[in-house]
Length: 522
RNA sequence: GGGCCUGUAGCUUAGUCAGGUAGAGCACCGGGCUUUUAACCCGGUGGCCGGGGGUUCGAAUCCCCCCGGGCCCGCCA
Image (cartoon, rainbow, N blue to C red; front, side):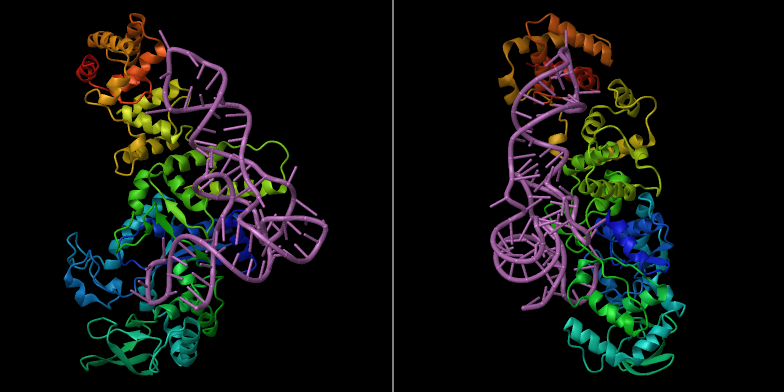
């Protein structure tokens, strides 16, 4: 059974409508690590729907979280906004200075991420957490938390091992400048929390408005109740002993709710670079990843891995492997006796493919391209025209008739990939400007005279694949060289290696003068 | 210090929740095709499932101990 289906099965025991949630703080550029947060939850949601459970998928944006510090991509102007919720800070301009504030900091980073989500078929209900504060939905839980502040403080201290001061208060009011930093609570009388800032300025916050917020660990527990959350997979940082999951569960119960089951997922790492972090610059954005990898394959990267395994994200050579595995699974048919183990495997695999579809419920086979990434990568490099690629694929019986939507999508991503720094060098076709020293040493006299003959024939033949092919054959006929060695010679001269894609296709994509000059320079 | 995840073929791994004779892919080797699309097709080598103990008729799977690897514990997915 696929992990998402397994989770759905567990959730069904609750017997209530499912509310599957993701929560992310929009403090900077989103990266593909966030995609695991989103997709883990969204796949469980889909599995619930597939199991005929009533289910909603909600993305809670932590727009009420304060700016913690001035990140590297921000100008010093942001100093003044430290401690202010991200929803009430102006978005940074490209140079890092604050904009006019028409778009908030939170929205600025959120919007492109949501567009990327659409591309992978994720359409969450969006809840901006600051709005939940603004419209008073938190008020009852804030009041309850304040009235139980001793108990909550005990839970926090005993479970997390943190030492909280005697005067710790489960509500952080915003001071005169809108920041929560340096503001001390003096008293509480519903619905007002009275406070004083470092300069002795005092005021009051209405807990029915966004005049302040619950501290993270209490906020999390409270929102579970407010939104009826039944499932919220969280990153492993929250899952550590004494982490926010461990404190959230008893606090949620104290506030009168039923917490979701603890589900903790491992992080995505970039190949060879450790965990991703916006601040260390180790990051690939979802948009960038999506420009290189077809959406169903990106989903598959998440779907194929168990929640507890870390994922090594690699837009280099491993992507060939990943894409080919996906294609293989689509057409795989198991024969012979189906043992219980095999059945489990098959179910898991089918689940992964089902979860990988951009459109829920569509037949995975519709995403079948029928061409390996490696082959497509080669064609994309030697042919600038898409039409010629389809023609080539028809000739090689990879496709028949017009290209499918799926394969058109694959090719467009492939072209981006080939053009990017991530494309593996050993898969790159490098056309030589002159014959390399190594190649020159490998070329025999027979091959050499063949190449000279070929250069003559290419000088005045028609410049299409058939004519070039005829020119090659004629040159072989006019030389002493064996057919196999003739082609090796062509590849050595043009690419510097003894193998390559169909020679005529390769040559016809080159400038006549260029190829002729290379060949005659032997 | 506390805790989580993880260890299965050279590499990446499925199978572990519901115990029943270890499955893949890559790589490698061989064959087919052969005036060649790095393609494609067929076959093969290769595992005391990290180690030890226990439960069981039966353990990769459940329990205990140990060892190795990764990671988390202000905020971060």
